[in-house]
Length: 379
Image 1 (cartoon, rainbow, N blue to C red):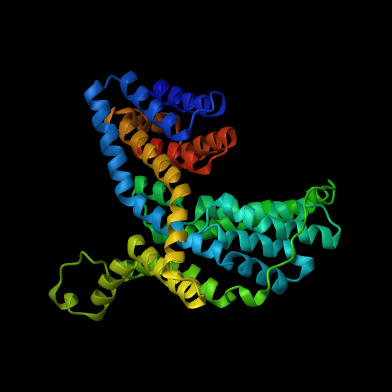
Image 2 (cartoon, one colour):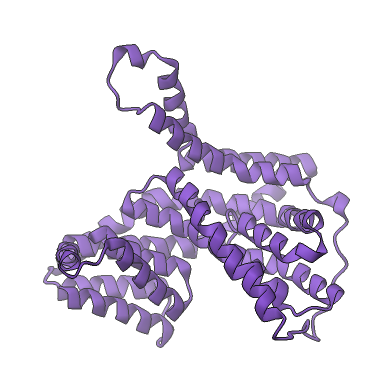
């Protein structure tokens, strides 16, 4: 059973890296192959595929769809640029690398990694050219901030899906993600970027033409953008805090009528990712769109545009749910759990090693998280 699980992970890496098969198809093939190799019947494999896909997509599809629309509004209306430019101005040119790390960290929460990079790379080139420094001094901090938030902080798709598979509390995932993620972003960003940038001179590519910066008056305010970013995060964390103070399942008549109970129930609803992201998305439609001169049809066009990239993420996360379900139904998870106890390895160590190997091998944080969460979820 353990050999089958290991072979499944290696096969996934081979299909994505060598064969260049799309991650969605590769995950489905590996999941079905693992199930058949573990002795499941054809019908059982198909049923696990349907159950695993349905269970995870019933949760993640809504979140990714709303998050994509929210991120599209920030991207298209200049909200992301405003955030980055204001932070760089506040930190000062000498500490611009720190500002870029923080900007990447914040922007990657609602905006897909690749989109955030494309939006902010002109600022990196501009700073490198103006200050006559290596592009690495600014590009690495930006990428570090984007990558850490993309992999650590809900409501980005990967952490959301992993939390769903593992049954983790999202508020805690956000808090622990910030605690673990910021030091990682600092070391990988401004610290390493400054070190390697002073040793490797990477000039701005000769073909890059720096465009004139957008008039600041045409961009939304920093306070508005920052406030919209905080809306879903604060609501989700507030739900966790209120639940810890007043558990909703406590059956007590005196407590039932108490204010704490009412607050807990309110945040259980408002702090659910569906509602929290819905509120943030609707607020972005109005404050970034309608209030700044966009028509309803233009806002709708932006929302439609966002769902193209979201579709791929949704399918990949769904396939990750299939992988987890097959591992569970085939009893591989139980075998893996017993083996971990025998060798003294913890599920956390297993998850980290698998995620690191898959991430370094094929590049996608989402695929790495889905693979590792599938294994640990089975355990």
